[in-house]
Length: 279
Image 1 (tube, rainbow, N blue to C red):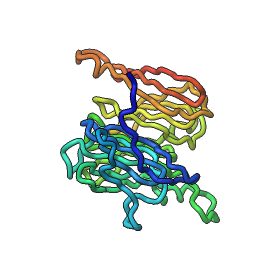
Image 2 (spheres, rainbow, N blue to C red):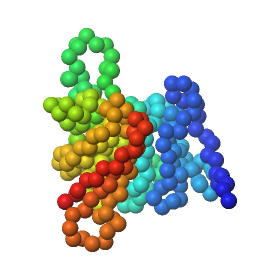
Image 3 (cartoon, one colour):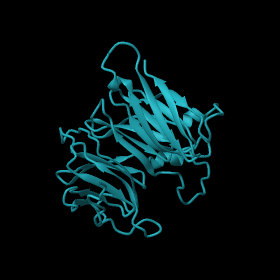
Image 4 (cartoon, helix red, strand yellow):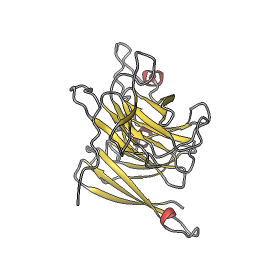
């Protein structure tokens, strides 16, 4: 039989059209809570058995928590920082170019990651008469590392993926630049393409990303280098989701090379499978 177990109601009207849009959600790694983000600028923790809201993280009277505007993405798959040794952390991406690390159990906002660098963006703007900064700033993807649980990553509409050390005063330890891949290549679309999704490898410090111009990339988070890139999707169509299957997990043998199969789903109406040889 099929039945609805719970319906969570509580996100408020928000966003440009005034609708209450849920932008992301998922179970915590221990299965105890459901966490959601919305266009109303709130992150909510729910009790899946009772259907009640346990806590709301929100912008509160200009105290500098969440900025006004939509929360765009979420990861609650784990993570360790200097204040917590368990999988009780959430990572929330925002439309204004910030990401927030929250403690889901203690109900605290722990820190802010400033992905969008206004000074860096302004330095590349040649129009000195512009009164308003129009550079893309929204964070579109976030994720905790599986192999290095004190690392996390943010991916933005600016085409950058930034790797953060949650044990090192939340410093940006590395940047992966999709724009650099388009210079002189001619086959990877617009150099201003933004990041749409990111996934960490389950056992290695690799980040798999997708872009708004149909590209899939593999990055080494230790040094920011691009290990591989895959094309084939329409360059005018963003990739909406990506999934990984690594035989480093499914194959118990430690001998030989490992491969990761990448599944990407695009606005061009196709789903493509790519294979990356990890070595």
